[in-house]
Image 1 (cartoon, rainbow, N blue to C red):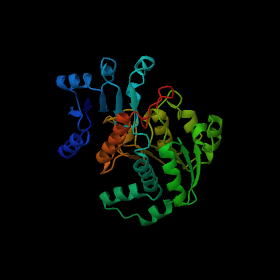
Image 2: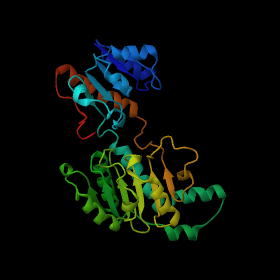
Image 3: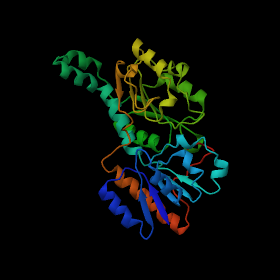
Image 4: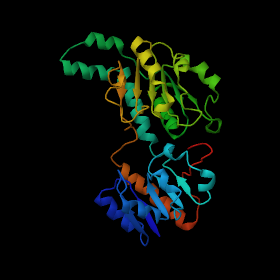
Length: 316
């Protein structure tokens, strides 16, 4: 059996995986752009691990299982899964990034609440503004935090915010047992939130969910932290609220366009932290991804249900 991967593994990981998947063979493709040889190898493989071009999934007739090296599967949604699902199972890294993403979200909120971003800028200017800074500082303790998106990231946010002493309310699908699960309930809760954390996937329901009307429900001085998908937020409406001073700040790990264009006004908008879709990163990321794949490979070989199967009816 041949396994194809285009995950960006270095020599150490390649050597380890080659040994770990034996007696099966593993082919390492280019992480950036598949060569002709890479595409041929994928078309001949039974298993793929990484981010494979969507246009190759239908012609890759030998492919039975694709393990994504991400949680998001947006690029594959437009395929004919009614046909493809008959032979191909797709799994993702559901829950894998929850802790680092939650930590980035909280670090960003703390940076805005404790004016760390402002202090860094003042250091660059060699400007001492102690009285000004102290008067602006807030604490997570006692803050009303609303977490929209109650999956693995939402749960990780809730537990950590609670440890800080925040009052946490949650919004998500009914199956995850949040505090609220309907849009009217969400709209009623937004004006009471000091910080709104977005950990929503991209679906037909969530795309544009935080448009101008919903963003305008946020109270003056609130902070928005988006850790899910850039398509969820109307960036123009967000920019207007930031420029007017109604919102105290925003922390965006994700944006509608990635990479963010050099002329995007988000680069210079007031009180904005941009973490460039790095929230899920950590030093042990590649080791962890390999471990998830190898654990699922054992299930595949044994005929057991795979972990993290994508539900195409839900879109994630």
